[in-house]
Length: 397
Image (cartoon, rainbow, N blue to C red; front, side):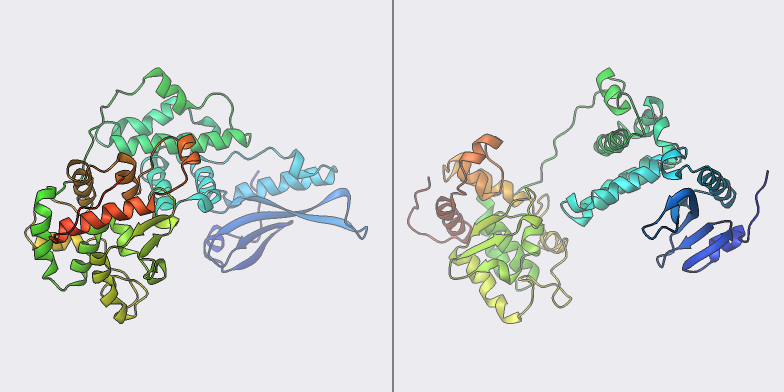
């Protein structure tokens, strides 16, 4: 039987924001954002509101992009029949099983507050969008089993192994949440595939950032010091602090205490998710103090006012200087080699200077000091080496 109403498919697609009736309690709700969903208003026989009047209740029937107008009318009719019998549709209607894509999108929204930053959250859903949704996105979440997961992973398992590994983890998360909410039962197929060894083992190749030899840094730094571009200032500061690109370029003046000679990088910009204090040496201060006159929000301002330099600015400077085979991130490795081979710095001091976590969770719980004074001595010596300044040997450790 084909049910009829006031709305048409064309109206459903084009009506503006508001609540549009189809008849018999069925409405199309269009949000200001353009999102469209179906609701049905029913009066459950015998149900009363606080004033004793018949209780009218709205029930969602799904998004209009997924639920067609005919499906919405059929569901609305089912809900009205139950209401006339005194049955509350909320507890008696057959539960609608969401598709994998619908449920994954909901998991993404629910976890937004937990992402380290917006970029990471977007990467999470983009992986599913590119490699899972085209193949299993429209399938009910309770019908995803090992063959469907393999259909997503197999084509990219070898050529894009890291992406495939992340995809597997994200599919597993979606299916785990679906099980916790009663939409699935049994073992997670991603776990079963892993335990069965259904996919070939891939030996991951460790890729290191190309680094400059520590012996070559003083000459490079001397050349860099003759340049006046903002990218040159930022690169000098990056070399001296051993910090990551994003930490340096995102640095704001309110993070710097010139009197205490200290830069405190907030947790949201740190890879570890923990605040990191960087001791500032004379050479570092000589770079940033003159920039204060620019009165910018960021220490290393880019071409746009109150906006930082682009992420590529320092790498492009290296290319203009004809420095090949070296990355900006590689200077962290350069510093680490020097700290071991020249300064003989204790491992925990060198690692903490690079904001690496040292020891197990238990060890870190008891060793709460960030060894700032000892790290300051190491950074002073590194600054003197890089800038070619002869000075007294500073004992580290």
